[in-house]
Length: 321
Picture (tube, rainbow, N blue to C red):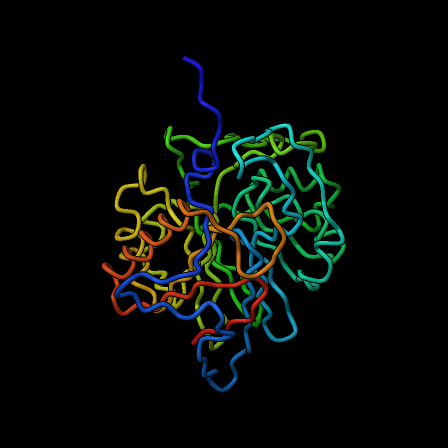
C-alpha cells in the first residue's frame, strides 16, 4: 500500500498552530503581556524568558544567556502547505538570526530534527557556547565543525550546576504521528558526513530539561509532545513549557503530564506556530491548528483549574514567580 503524503501533523505528532484566543472558562494570561508578576527573593538572579518560536527559548539570567532549541532560520520545507520535501537543503539565515540568540553560555538541544537543531552549530561557532544534547547531537556537532570541547553528550539524570542556575536533564520521548511513528527516526552512533538536507537530521532520541534559577522559579522545557511519567516524578516545576500534543495517539496526554509534573502554577504551550514564516506577531495559525490548541487549553483547565496559561508571543520578555 502506498504511504500517503507526509502532512505536518503526521510529521510532528503535534499541532503547529498559534494561540490568539481563549477558551470559555479558561484563565488565559493575555498574549500581549510582557511579564508574569515576579518577586525575586534576596540573592536571587533576575531571569527573563523570550520565546524564539517552535520550542525555542532564550533565557537571560543575570549576565548569562541560555538557549533551548534555537531555530530562527525558519526556511520553507513545504510542511505547512502539503508539499513537504524531505530533500530540502539545510540553510542558515544569518541575517534572520541576527542578535536574537545573544551570546549564550550554553545551548540545550531536546532532539536533532531540523526545526530544533539546524541553527545550533552556527550559533555555537559564533558564540563559543557549549552544546548539550544526545550522543546524536554530539556526533552531528562534530560533523558540523564544532570541536569536541564545545559538545557535551547527556542521557538524562544529570544535574548540571552553572552557578546562577542549574539544569536537570530528563530522558523523554518524541511525539508520535497518526501512524504511531515519526519522520526521520534513528540515531547517529558515529560522526556522519556533514548534513546537507533535513532528512540528514534524524530525531536522535529526545530529552527534556528543567532549569532552576538561583532563588527563583524552576522551569520545565519540552521539545516534543511525549514523555516518560516516571522520569518526571519529583520535578514539580513552577512553570512548564509544554509541547502541544497529538491527542489522537497519546493517551490522556494532558492529565498524565500535569499529574506527573505536580500541576505547575503556569503552563506555556509551545511548538504551535508555523515555523516556516518569520518571527512576526501575532504568530500564524490555521483554523484546524487553532481548534486543536483550544482543545489542549480546555484539557488543562479541566485537569488543573487553578493553573495559569500563558500564550507567548515571539521575542517578548516574560518573568515568572
